[in-house]
Figure (cartoon, rainbow, N blue to C red):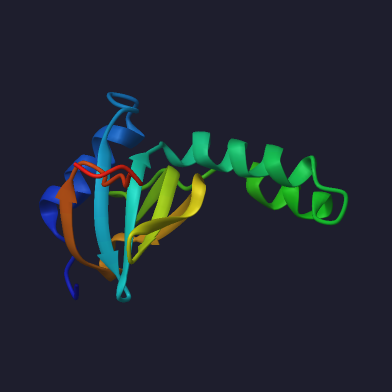
Length: 121
């Protein structure tokens, strides 16, 4: 989107302000479909830092994520946790990941996340 969707910016703003950590969202960005739950940037950064700190090969990168997020102006990114990139009938990774998506790159979105099941409906 050349101008970020005002509704999406407002949703991200509510998540950032701590009013909600339960918002599930699905977005299309750069042709990828990403589905999951939004987190405040500070919470997202802390979790990414913890994961990296626990890695023998990547622990040096954990400090990059401990810097305070910028607080001026409206949110510019969505921070997903428990998220998956949808590919065919599966979500990658199966357990969910941590994704950061620029709001300006979102071309479509919907409230809620998508899940898949191997069992017939």
